[in-house]
Image (tube, rainbow, N blue to C red):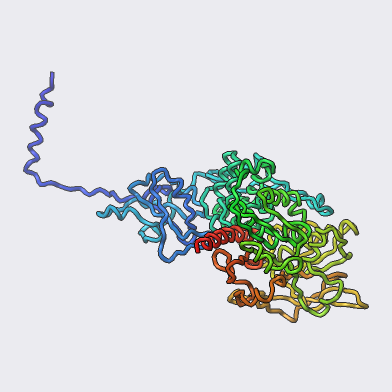
Length: 601
């Protein structure tokens, strides 16, 4: 039975009806916990717009959008993340995955606004009260990572195992190593824009992760018909912008490319790439030079149905890839695997044929529907210092060619190499091996104008040269070669204090008070290469448009001012295999367009 108090309680409330209401203020303002997941902040100068935050968001709360004043450039998409707080659940995965560490979270949690659209904003661009507040959320611990920061080491021969032979140094990834390295990729695609060939890098790395190497090979050949070669000697500019490299090691993109090509037997290529039957269109294309651009052009033209003939003046195809790069970096077996597949598509390669001597360019024009030339940079450049005309002064590019051709190399017991690029490192390491074989020791000095930080050679080339016994002394300019009794004694040098001016133009400056002398019985010059266009007849030269540097001017399809003549590779872009491959591909598209347009007229 209900108690009397329970029955009368509702009526007692009426006693407060006539009383004045009293409001008691409580201290409701409080600080958030130090690790509170508050509103986002973004350092837009550190952010590269890679989009990993957008990809990982499970709620679709992040979009990448263009921002005024931020331009697209190598390694930066020009986009920045916009966050929609109508969707965000503050899980912080976007912060955890941010490759540059630019995206963070404050511990600010109050934001009142009558405009619902205000809660969709671009951190770091749309200025907020919390921009300068300390970060709130932090990762749980030092071992908490959504991807590994450290690349998988590449197995290589030790210096003592390689310094007397030309066997390949880099051994290649195993399946386990390749899949572990591929798992580091965040699939942002920043690398694609920087790659001259715009290869589908995230896609072929994903194929490795999925253990689908057939698909990986197809993706490689979409944009690059020389994967064995590029997987070894590519300049890998893509790795310099790899987003993962901002807080760790960049992905080994080049080695992963090599892994795919290495694992696929050559006899399976045509089936995997579905090139067993190609319909011919009856058109014929002449290609001058069997280097990367010529081979690339021939490959893509053959797939379009063109009959391609490559004219190569040297005994074997490959251009500078065969005659300028030592076998310890690029074995002939890997080189021939790529070339043989291109030949299997019906491409004919005529070696020991010099255009301008054995057949003229005019003859090629009349016998073929179009001509592509990619003759490379095969001429060495001299320093022209006193003594440079001595018979014991050699051009690096010529010596490297002689090594490939099996000629006797005049390596003395002490050598000085002038140059700081990859060709200088190649001849340094080649001569070091020959010295070791002949004399049992290495005595070679390589010097360059550039400081070590400025040297254009790959860092790994410099390190490995030293490991193999060479002495690298950067920052000195050649003055004269000392000759006594018609024998070279060495090289006199002066300190180089700067190589480029404020506009990055070549304009070296020297400190004449600092000099040095590098002893050597032989000097090798490796200061760049030049083009040989002697095969062009006068009537062609007169109608070719050249730039201020004497290079042939081409359009976006690598078509010259003579409509049937297309030009690409080193003589347009400079010495770089991947640029040559890209040029050949674009030129093939250009030739197809030119002949299609011509057929409609």
